[in-house]
Amino acid sequence: MKAIIGPDVYVNASVAGGSSPQRVVQRVIEEHKGEAATTQWILDRVEAMLNAHPIFVAEAIPQQMGVIRDLVRLVEDEGKHGAAEWETALVAAAKAAGVQRVITDHPDLVNKEHADVEFMSTEAWLIEASMPPPPPEK
Image (tube, rainbow, N blue to C red; front, side, top):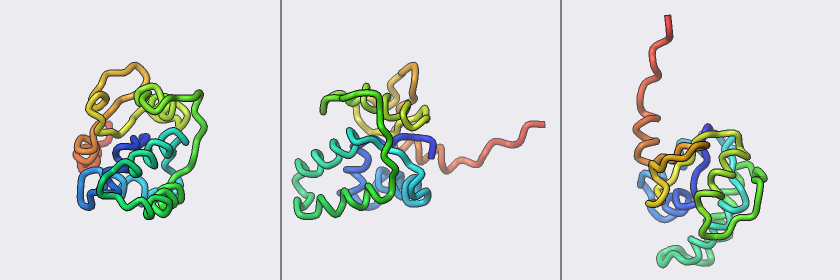
């Protein structure tokens, strides 16, 4: 996998079956078990967001977090980030994982220009993933 998945995508995939975030997580994570990278900051945000979500059952959170942890590999980023520091934390996660893309539907980040990474929505990623590869160069 050549992208970091934002915490919002994991949360939306957890609560909205059949949604674009759920399809991204299935294609990226489940098809490449153990290849996708994440950071502790992302996992902490997912857990906090699930705890705050009105329809997610609190007793199911440890199991859901276990499923996510089983499907990804944890990488160390270069710093401590506050809960609201999405951009810096996700850029650091991408750098730590050696990728240049972050898949997120966060309204402040989706399609945001950044020197080090490309932020893209789940919809954009799904469209790109469904496109045939370019023809070989001659």
